[in-house]
Amino acid sequence: MMCPHCHHNSSRVVDSRPADSGHAIRRRRECENCGYRFTTFERIEVTPLLVIKKNGTREEFDRDKILRGVMRAAEKRPVGMDKLTSIVDDVENKVRALGGTEVSSQLIGKYVMDELVEVDDIAYIRFASVYREFKDMGSFVSELNELMSREKDDTDTSEPDSTEDQGKGSIQ
Image (cartoon, rainbow, N blue to C red; front, side, top):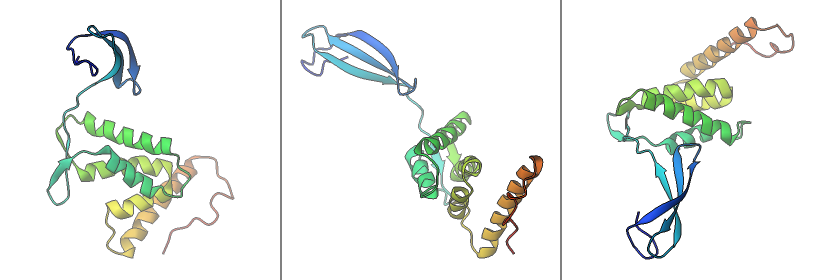
């Protein structure tokens, strides 16, 4: 490793420790020529992943773009940044676990929706309205009814609560 101070091409590792939640190694190095100490980071080089857009174009996978989308969907909702980051991590892990070099934007959107529906109904609907491109009020209402029936099925399996079902009905 070249010394940033004297540009000598030999250094020794003084200390190594995990960094970035185990996804990198932080190394303290010392130049063998001038004694200058500096830090380097070693990361796994991941193969580039291309996203195939709806119009057929391809662009490089960008986790920040997904994070911005879920942040916008969860705006002014009681969902913490840690949870949003966790959603993006889960989606990226699922996409990379597929093992391919290309993935469709529709599959990424589906993975995001699968995660968001478990976290916040409003954020889910907001994201779905952009992802599914609702053309009219009918498609929006049918998505709401599906979400509410899923929620009703979840409450039917648990102990009934008389106050829980008040105000919940299908939208006509």
